[in-house]
Image 1 (cartoon, rainbow, N blue to C red):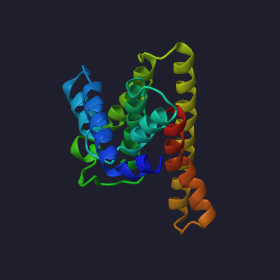
Image 2 (cartoon, rainbow, N blue to C red):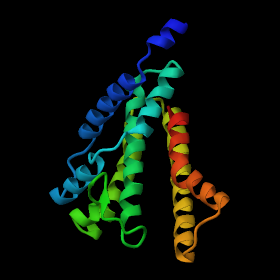
Image 3 (cartoon, rainbow, N blue to C red):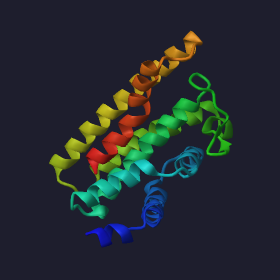
Image 4 (cartoon, rainbow, N blue to C red):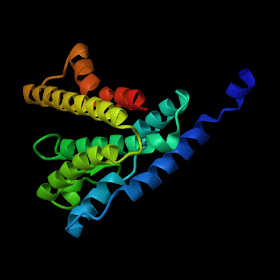
Length: 195
């Protein structure tokens, strides 16, 4: 067993899984209309990133003895939700960021209404992707329940973030941890559980 562990190349695993996820993400969009909406969704979803959440989903599936191909739609759905949360987080009414992954944010590249709609459609497509997967209806229902709960927690974490920004003070350690547990950590947790 130690030989198998010693020969495992984590970097190689991450890269292979990232490529698998990137290809699945690229194939997941279409034929949204108008073209500007589709373009803004593709721009946001394919803008880069480490793809850790979907990779964790696939790794958890493998560790549990599952088939990666069956987990791939769930991994794609997780990244769609993550991307939606970033699009909305970057808006002027939230964090007002100009750059994400070194490129203009969606609302800067397109406009604010199109950014909001791109996020909304990605949110909807995430659930559509799970509902069309080849898993049993029982599994699909469990996945939707888990992802819905995570989305609620992301919003709760964002509210905490907004409150902290409005108070214009540095949060305490416990306030910060509470915020990132919901805003950030919840998707890592649910990625493993869903996988």
